[in-house]
Image 1: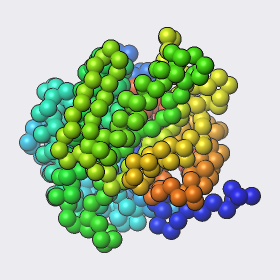
Image 2: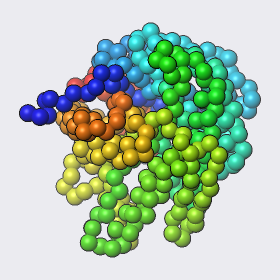
Image 3: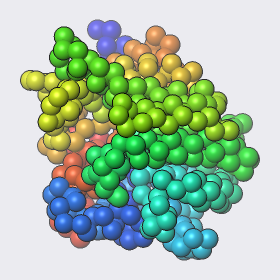
Image 4: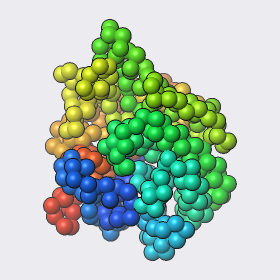
Length: 418
Ligand code: IFM
C-alpha cells in the first residue's frame, strides 16, 4: 500500500534523453562515424547511418514527448557539426540547434544540453583526442562558443557525459574509438575529461548570464556519471573482493570525489597513477547527473571480469535488471552534497516485456528515497526512442518508442512503457 502513496515533489522534472550521434543521423565528421566502418567494430554490423533521422524530425519527436507528460528533455549538441574544422563554425548547424531549442521551448520542454557525449570531431581525434592537453583548450573554446550562442535559450548544462565510460571503453577495453587497450592511457584520458568538466563549469557560469526560464538561475551545471554498483561476485573470495574495490574506487568513487574536492586521484595497480588538482574543479557541481542501468558482479582471475548475477533477470544486452538499484545509486550520488538529477536510466528491451514493471519499481524506490530526504531533481529516461547503441549497433533497444530502422521514414511506435 505504501508504494501507491509515493509522491514526487512539485517541480520534479520528468522526461527522456537522447544524444546527437545516436539519434540525428548523418554525423559524418566525428570519430565514431569513421570507427563504425572498421570491420567488426559494431557487433551487429550496422553503422549509425541515418539513425532515427531526428535531425529532420525533432519537432514531431518533442511533440510526442510532451504528449507523454514530459517537462524536460536532454539532448547533446554535436561538436563536429558546429565546428567541422578547427575554428570554423558551420552557420547552418548553429542555426539548426537554435531551431531545436526553440522547438523544445514551444513544446514546454526544458532543455538540458550536453556538450560532450562520447563523439569527437575528426580534427580533434586526429590531433590526439583526449590524450592531448590541447584538446582541453579546444573544448574550452567550444564550450565558450555554445554558452554565448545558446545561453539565452539554455540554463541546464551537462558538460561531459560519462567520462569514465568514455575513457575505459576507448582506451582500456578498446571497443570504442580509438580502440586502445592500455589502462595507463585510460587514466590519463579520464583525468583530462574530469579537468575539462571543471573548466567548462567555470566558463559556463562566466559566459551564460541569461536566465532563459526566469527562475533566477542563468546556468545550472553538472556532468553525467555512469554509476553501476560494482560488487564482488564471490564475497568470500578475497581476489574478487579486492578487484571489486579497485574497480569501484577508480570508476566510481574517484570520479564522484573529483568535482567536490578538486583532487583527481586515479590509480590501477600495475598501470600507474594520475594525481592532480586542477584549478576550478573543486565545487564544480550545481547538480550531479546520475546515469544508472545495472550492477555488475566483479570476478578476479576470470575471462569475464564483470558478470550479471546468476539467475537474475537480464535485459537484451545481458545486463542485470535491478530496479531498486536506481534509488541506491541516487543515495550514493547525493553524498557528493550536490542534488541529483537522473540524466539516464532504462533498459534494452525490444519486446518491452520487462521495462514497464522495472520502470514502475525503479520509480517507486526512487520516490521512497526522495521521501527520506535524498535530493533528486528529476528523472530522464534513456531513451525517448530506440537509437544507435554504440558498439552494440541497433541491437540495444532502449526506447520508450520502437523505431523501425528498416523503413527510410523511421516510423516510431510508442511502447507500453511510454
Ligand atoms: O546509450 C548509452 C548512452 O549514450 C550513455 N549511457 C548509457 C546508454 C546505454 O548504454
